[in-house]
Length: 352
Length: 93
Image 1 (cartoon, rainbow over the protein chains, first blue to last red):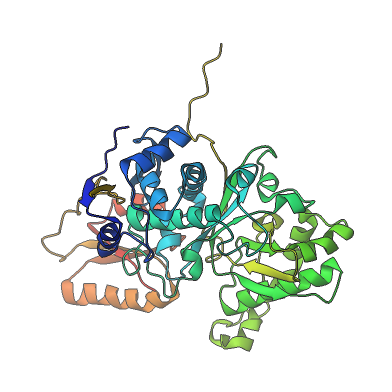
Image 2: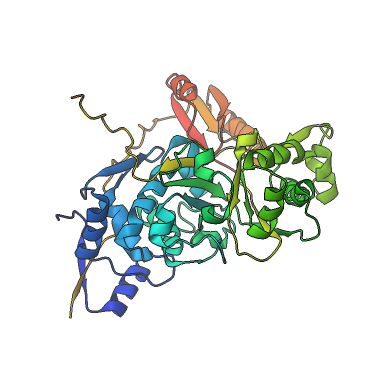
């Protein structure tokens, strides 16, 4: 396979590490040196020519080719079989509602949360149970990391360059989770967002760091959700009041109670939509009275609509914990779901 | 042993943006400022406007704000900008 990228000769693996680190081409961790063979294997797996145009970043008009995505995926530790998920995730991030440039350049310091659904999870050994949000397995870790390296090397999203984050958060290394569909009675996130059950898909969201809650002292769905809602409201008071996509991650111990009460994800989304609301005057309780002004009675909802809540079944079997994943900043960036292997702007096959 | 490894970057393989034509003088010019609209920028750009008029003889400063401070300027603003002699991208936080 003919590749267009410039090649460099290095003496050994250690030399390769220094070569990439010294040029600012990594996230600070060691990388897998991408060779022509390993990159070609990724492209062969997905069936894309090296110069396949995956998309164009709309603000800075950067053309993104399959070859460059594959090089960064190899560096992140991806196997060829992981590569279609990487391509789908970055294609989703290139869609206008995601607002890639704003989300990656902002001082707000969000990361790309990637939720994987469908049969591909089992094929890749992705584990949505123990330690679901952090290095649960090889595939989720390397796929999430690939997205970060792609941003660094193809979009110049390096700290102090395009990336103007005040803090960032650890999810910038890798922020990928596979939904635990096998142990859940619910529709998957992708199904809820219109993807057929038999298809695999990714959902990407510009996401702040996760905030953990715990409620092991009730079996009532409303009371469990009141704890999630309280954390969302805390985020609205302490960080951003504006509505956007929130994700909540519900583990098996809490899912049991929802299942016993016949609560679906739609029921959960409705409850959170109706209850995750604060008054502007609440800002005065946390040192922000200067911006309450004369609008203290104005009510703000965390969600613009019920569909703005992403409900994800994941987590280890024990523990009445839960996770709130807030948006980067309100609705400026919207979550995007994309089927893996879907072709955007493809011509339909000719009619026979 | 030698390993041939690949460049992971864009290698500057993208269309370069050409800088806009510079004005020889600001005297009598109409300048637009498209601000990202963040709260802290308002006083700054008003002071900037006074400076342009008082110190550089700018005829008029047109202040506009983007609808989304994290996104490119709205198309109608870019259309309006065609009427100005120069445009300042007003980024602040």
